[in-house]
Image (cartoon, rainbow, N blue to C red):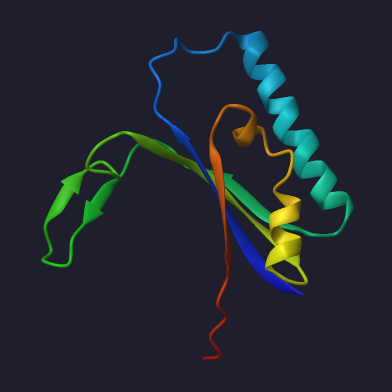
Length: 114
């Protein structure tokens, strides 16, 4: 099996912060979806990304923030195991990001023998 990375993207919105109850519902949706992948033995790891960061350019210029314009948010990623890209894409079905209009980018992870 190969490893694939799912990158979770969504559009920035000006909605108020979710209530604690809404947050619990969202966390349960993510846990249920990830748990389903783990139950298949295809889960490797996942993490959410914070809003703090800096960007380093090829010229060495360091700018605040991970993006120049905050239109799209990369909220996190997950590594899964699958036989091929089609199977990895199928695993993205049901991702909570998709339910809010976001996207899941699925990419193969290149392994370099050192």
